[in-house]
Image 1 (cartoon, rainbow, N blue to C red):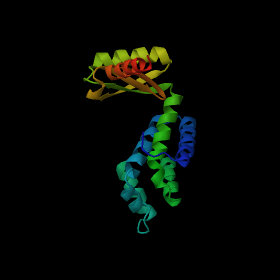
Image 2: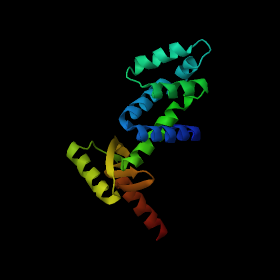
Image 3: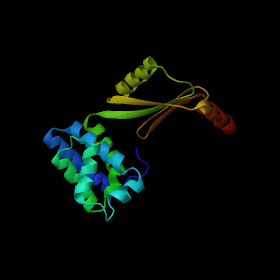
Image 4: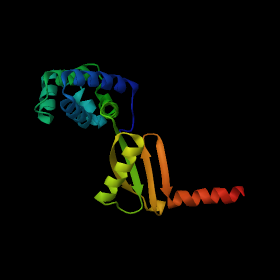
Amino acid sequence: MSGTRDVAGRRYAVAVLEIAKNSGELGAWQEAIENLDALTDNPAYVEILQGDGMTDDTFQNIVRRVMPDISSVQINLFRLLRRKNRLSLGPSIQSFFKELLDDEQNVARATVTSAVPLDESQTVEIADKLSTTIGKKIIVETRLDSSIIGGLVIRVGDRLIDASTRGQLGALRTHIARS
């Protein structure tokens, strides 16, 4: 997810999801929103794309170079954002759209942190167990953090499962301090 999320970005994402569902083009819209994010993730790009010297034709040519198969409805969204000086919402729109699309497709994303790299079979096993527990398809992103010493720290949405050695040692320290 992007660093900053703006409520206006969520409103655009909700509208885009509705358009995508009604047109049956979720994949094409997902690609368009990812490209919007790529075009607008740097404030300098936004400044150039919204600058006074940028004509609508030049803007459309730039967008078409990034996304040759863009539909007229999709490019009109980009043009609307530019006209309203809202291109800076691109990363926010992408972040919310990804979240809304996951909800629509019954998908949850998990971040699994371990002290050592996990192999493919371990990652699949973790995804399967989480999927059974949560009742959604799980997409796992792995991270390394040697400071957890061993075990795993798993985050799915606002749920945190700390099965790390560091977490267990911390819990033991707290228990001893209370005794």
